[in-house]
Image 1 (spheres, one colour):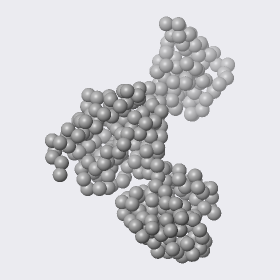
Image 2 (image 1 turned 180 degrees about the vertical axis):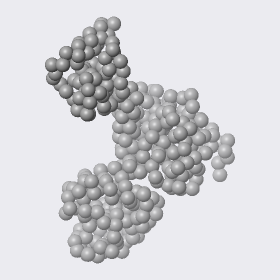
Image 3 (image 1 turned 135 degrees about the vertical axis):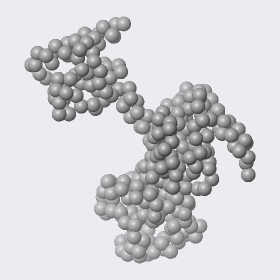
Image 4 (image 1 turned 90 degrees about the vertical axis):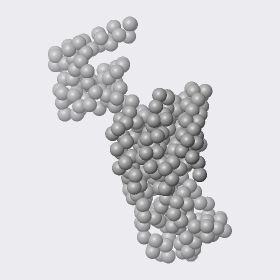
Length: 319
């Protein structure tokens, strides 16, 4: 068993490699910390994922104190930390408490990433609609998340394994319990009597028993796992973009006595709406006071306000 001192040395070494690897490639280093369903305080460091602008490291943790140690070790570095705040495991509330203590940390839902990755597989193989039936096997927060996402796409969803002997069988069989072998060979044999080659997804990473995997291979049925690395990179990139929008580009300010709003903030009637607050480049129109946009007006006060802001933007562009 690794000593606490050695664990701290390994932690600092991994953070250093993430930071240096990003610097060499001109990328932003990001560390996501997901809630683990295992018992070890810090379980698995996953290989860094490179996206268009990010070098992404991922760590699973089952203990809030362990997460605190990671946050402390990353302090003073250029690494962004994003913490899983989903209702995924028994540590959920403790993880959320960390967000109060460290408001600079980014927030994401690992559960949502898992369900989106699973649905991406389904969408690749099955056209959405009531004729595409999905059977979810498992009882976990992931089961609920996948069911909700699949229903939004129009899939027929059931969690009743009793229908596996009915006709027609499901077009997809998805295991949704983390690290628990809930899909057995008998379930696959029941489907085989009704149809060929269902879409099999090991959504919980370890959802199929060894016998079930052997039977699927004998039937030449591919068993897929969700591409979590790609899904996580996309989710964090989108979350960073939204955070930038809300913290830098959204809100209101005064320009030469004229109230300007941007980024979705509802303005009062006559407030000018611009494309971004921190560095506006375009005037979109005026707020109507009800959440709508007015692009043409004869109101002299509104027109005078627009002219003031236009003059401000022109002068700023020449500075």
